[in-house]
Length: 178
Image 1 (cartoon, rainbow, N blue to C red):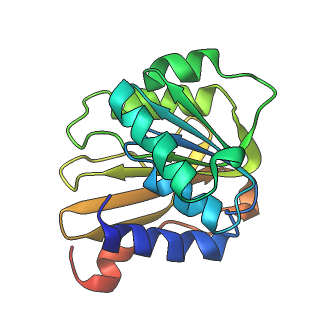
Image 2 (image 1 turned 90 degrees about the vertical axis):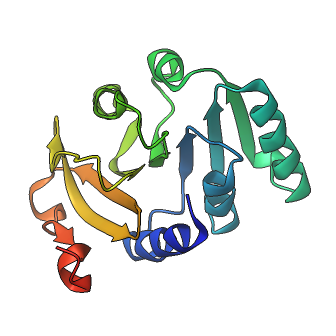
């Protein structure tokens, strides 16, 4: 995720008070999203990345930032982690930044939501290309925020609990990008 997109994302997340519990960083890459969550108050982060060399980089980045004690790196495909995730571990924030052309992105969203590994008030953030159209809802989760910055987007979903949903805020209308 580009720095300006990440900056915008964390500005939004602070408004949701989502950076206080356990975080799951799927398709972690170098771990920058999960590490940023830890540096902003998350208590623990699980990083999931399938490339062994990249997992080593995540560990090095965690050691460099002195956050290794509050993290665990899982070197495996996201789909497998979601299948075998401990049912008693729940996340206040789940971040997915898959490859932008990933044809399985919606299936992965449904798997993550279907496993109920989120707290009842948790959030799911999905980074994606503007050429990828995501639904406004998956299972019992509703999109509450969409933001596009150049050639990058992110969508934020939360469980549909009646009044908790603020309504979809589509920032394309705010920036005139429609």
